[in-house]
Image 1: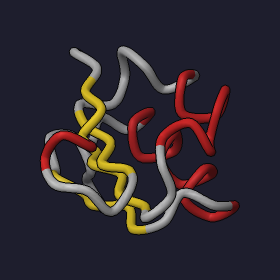
Image 2: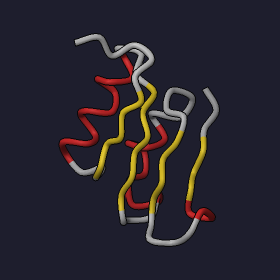
Image 3: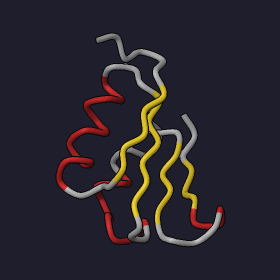
Image 4: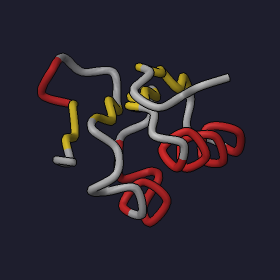
Length: 71
Protein backbone atom coordinates (compact mmCIF):
# COMPACT_ATOMS: atom_id res chain seq x y z
CA UNK A 1 0.00 0.00 0.00
CA UNK A 2 1.38 3.42 -0.98
CA UNK A 3 1.25 5.84 1.95
CA UNK A 4 3.25 8.79 0.58
CA UNK A 5 0.98 11.84 0.67
CA UNK A 6 -1.94 9.95 2.23
CA UNK A 7 -3.89 11.67 5.01
CA UNK A 8 -4.05 9.33 8.00
CA UNK A 9 -5.80 9.77 11.35
CA UNK A 10 -4.34 7.91 14.34
CA UNK A 11 -7.00 7.68 17.05
CA UNK A 12 -5.38 7.20 20.45
CA UNK A 13 -1.73 7.72 21.29
CA UNK A 14 -1.12 4.87 23.68
CA UNK A 15 1.05 1.88 22.68
CA UNK A 16 -0.30 1.24 19.21
CA UNK A 17 -0.64 4.91 18.27
CA UNK A 18 2.89 5.65 19.48
CA UNK A 19 4.23 2.87 17.27
CA UNK A 20 2.00 3.59 14.28
CA UNK A 21 2.59 7.35 13.96
CA UNK A 22 6.37 7.16 13.31
CA UNK A 23 5.83 4.19 10.97
CA UNK A 24 3.35 6.17 8.87
CA UNK A 25 5.47 9.33 8.92
CA UNK A 26 8.49 7.33 7.79
CA UNK A 27 6.54 6.27 4.73
CA UNK A 28 5.55 9.82 3.84
CA UNK A 29 2.00 9.93 5.15
CA UNK A 30 0.51 13.14 6.54
CA UNK A 31 -0.51 12.11 10.03
CA UNK A 32 -2.99 13.62 12.47
CA UNK A 33 -2.98 12.20 15.99
CA UNK A 34 -5.94 12.57 18.29
CA UNK A 35 -6.35 11.56 21.91
CA UNK A 36 -8.54 12.62 24.82
CA UNK A 37 -5.58 13.05 27.14
CA UNK A 38 -3.73 16.39 27.11
CA UNK A 39 -0.49 16.61 25.13
CA UNK A 40 1.52 16.76 28.36
CA UNK A 41 0.47 13.20 29.17
CA UNK A 42 2.59 11.93 26.29
CA UNK A 43 5.76 13.87 27.10
CA UNK A 44 8.76 12.82 25.08
CA UNK A 45 6.78 10.49 22.81
CA UNK A 46 4.85 13.36 21.26
CA UNK A 47 7.81 15.76 21.30
CA UNK A 48 9.87 13.18 19.38
CA UNK A 49 7.48 13.62 16.46
CA UNK A 50 7.78 17.41 16.45
CA UNK A 51 8.76 18.58 13.01
CA UNK A 52 7.53 15.35 11.45
CA UNK A 53 3.82 15.38 12.27
CA UNK A 54 1.62 18.19 11.01
CA UNK A 55 -0.99 17.99 13.79
CA UNK A 56 -1.76 16.46 17.14
CA UNK A 57 -5.11 17.12 18.80
CA UNK A 58 -4.99 16.35 22.48
CA UNK A 59 -7.47 16.84 25.28
CA UNK A 60 -11.21 17.28 25.16
CA UNK A 61 -11.22 21.03 24.59
CA UNK A 62 -12.04 22.98 21.43
CA UNK A 63 -9.48 23.99 18.84
CA UNK A 64 -7.37 25.62 21.57
CA UNK A 65 -6.27 22.10 22.50
CA UNK A 66 -4.63 21.56 19.11
CA UNK A 67 -0.86 21.35 19.33
CA UNK A 68 0.78 22.05 16.00
CA UNK A 69 4.27 21.44 14.78
CA UNK A 70 5.26 22.61 11.33
CA UNK A 71 6.66 20.27 8.80
